[in-house]
Length: 391
Image 1 (tube, helix red, strand yellow):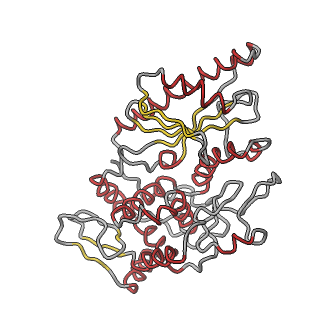
Image 2 (cartoon, one colour):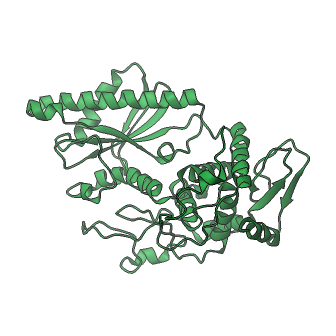
């Protein structure tokens, strides 16, 4: 893997793009040593299965391509049965979008795919749960097919060529679905029923997060490590599921907005420093909330009394804005803040051994066969590390 040079990293420094609702705290640039450490971290993560092999990734792409073709064929069939003009049928479109960990680029080996079926206005939800379900049954690659039509967000679940996929459905008020459709367009929400709006929400939030983060590749590397830490510390289950995955993605994205230039090794420390010292319940926002005048309920403690009791608000960036951690309790927040305060344990290491960047909590996140790992546990040493990183 070729490493970028410090000169390459410095390109575009003259006019940095501004992200977030406030100015960055620091624009200190990454140094050559930071690039080396980031590369070593990437290599150190590989044994933990946080990266998918290229062949498996290509298989996912192939499966999604086949599913997308299936969707377009079915929409054409439905259009014909509803006697649409031939000119409309030819260009009617229809598309599969993804969201969640796969769209964020942080899915692990064997992870499922969250998908959204976007259809034009003449395709009904009843069609999706009847004739489209029948078409899926005809596919030999499809196993374990089941529909959950009465769920809060209705979904079809299936295994397509051994890849688990959850498919939501959204019917837009459009005659045709263009190939370059941008789901971040708030105008698409006009005249939609609430189930379609809920179905669109996952894609819209995920796309906004990626649009609002300054360094996507480092963002993904950081989020992968957060996921691994949470699983190893048994935080990725039980009450802590409420802050995963979207909430952590927004915390990481906000940290990169404040520190857009440092590489991964320091961002991980910044995340925990900011999270533990934050004056909750002040909300985490990636952008200023927008009012689209669609009369949809949004998180706003000035208007909604129940929102005032949210303890750890992390607000989704897409309209209608919601608190992704609305059900965090007093005890849950106390435990999480305590976890934040216990980390990070910054790890320094000699050049001749594997790089371990950070760990949190009482146990070390990554365990290596190296005799020269020095764990910096005190808050003073962490601050010193941050201070030296800015020189």
